[in-house]
Length: 153
Image 1: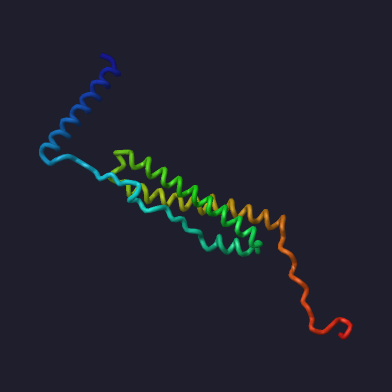
Image 2 (image 1 turned 45 degrees about the vertical axis):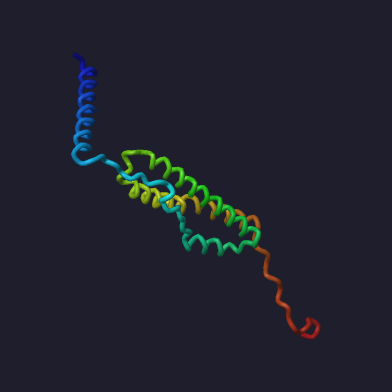
């Protein structure tokens, strides 16, 4: 008998003993059922935009049109992260081995996505804003109007 055959037999014995123990447990104590958290019970991902990002954005003195474009980009970026979170929740909730600790896994996923959003997503938007600001500097302030005409001064 070679090593592969011995491993197959061992695997078969482990599988059978697992099913036997499960049957004995179910007869004695009832079935083992972990509640399956549905994606409806999982609270949605809420990404927090740091104050530093808002300060950097204000420092670039964007026009209202440019500012609206940044807000649209930010909204699309947040929607992408939320969609990724929802897809991951659905996939993770279908893995039976994760059910007992699914809430912890989802909380880690939330934290990881927030960190990624702050460290990877927002800097790309700020970089685009910096490039735009360099290419389109704000107009200089209008000259001050004196109440005294120049020929009288």
